[in-house]
Length: 186
Image 1 (tube, rainbow, N blue to C red):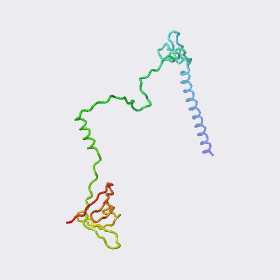
Image 2: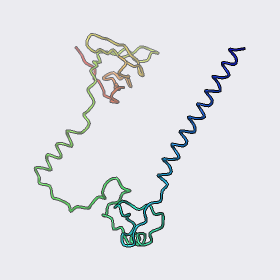
Image 3: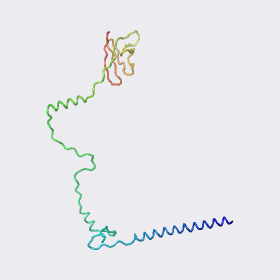
Image 4: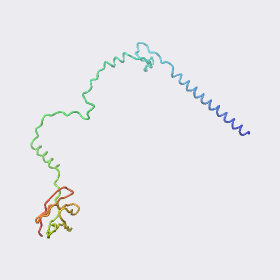
């Protein structure tokens, strides 16, 4: 029983201390707030809104004279259109290009042109034509040899388009280039 009474006493003391702390904090906040709520000094008639201390006036009245001054200001701008990322293009008169410069510009255009596709490095060295058989072409590249019909892909790079007795039409699949390869006799 004594322990229970002792605990009740400690709880009561804690409650009193919390209430006292809340009251003291509230009182200190109210005293600081009261100094902030004091009215600002009224400006003299000749100072036009400035307090005697030299700072801005906290007077909440509308200043019609300042409003009228701001209404009289007219925006003239600097001619730049803020809705366009770059200035508008100006038409310049045509300039005659000297012949040497024109040749250099033409050489630059040719140099920047797309280079021709690389040649197809296959050799056509024979053909097989049997009865009731599609023609077959014998092709080589270095030491590799292929036997192919029309429509077959050789070396994962070249498609045989057409086989004739004197040449083979080959399409380079990587460079989108077609080229006839003549029969070589070695």
